[in-house]
Image (cartoon, rainbow, N blue to C red):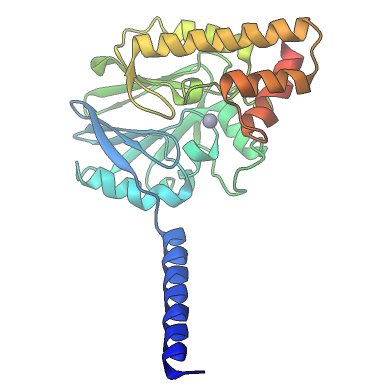
Length: 286
Ligand SMILES: [Zn+2]
């Protein structure tokens, strides 16, 4: 073997090693989050898990949701870029690990507030793909609660079943803004039947929340929108329900209905929608 060839092979091995190191470092890199201003003292953090709302008062910060455990440091970095106030409360929209996964890291210094059902769902490990150590809230409510801090209010209310049996919508009255949790998320609803969700109740739940006085909507996932955007989403849930309900009444099998929702709603094979929403809807819409 010539020296030149050996040198080339060595370079090749070095390049391979280099890309392997870059790959493993990339794997460890914290997910990229972006902070956007919504209104006055209200911001939202997008990326990785569910959208986090950041409400700044002169007595501390109120968060809505806290993404995954792995996002904690980056969330804190984003908050510190707009305020020195400490996080005092985390108001939780629901129990899923992409919204409540950071609870354990906030609990030593903040109070986490969720619906009673969200707490139970965490304790009973209702989310099959969640890490085993998601921490539940210490303070729970069944219908409505509110936090008053620095002269500002954040109100949390359970309007009924939908994405789960313990969804809360968080309302900032003076800012006329709501955080819907996953009652609005992405393009097609995920109905967590193991966690008590319901496609029948979902639209009723949103109709009740629609009575609030608001013009701005922070969804559980996706871009900030308005009341018309939420209404369009609500109508899309109804459309899906009517479509599936029609197929079920025609006597179509779960496989046949699955093919339709994959084609018309973009549900991917093996997705959470196919695992949780589809079998539940087949039963609920019978
Ligand atoms: Zn969710």
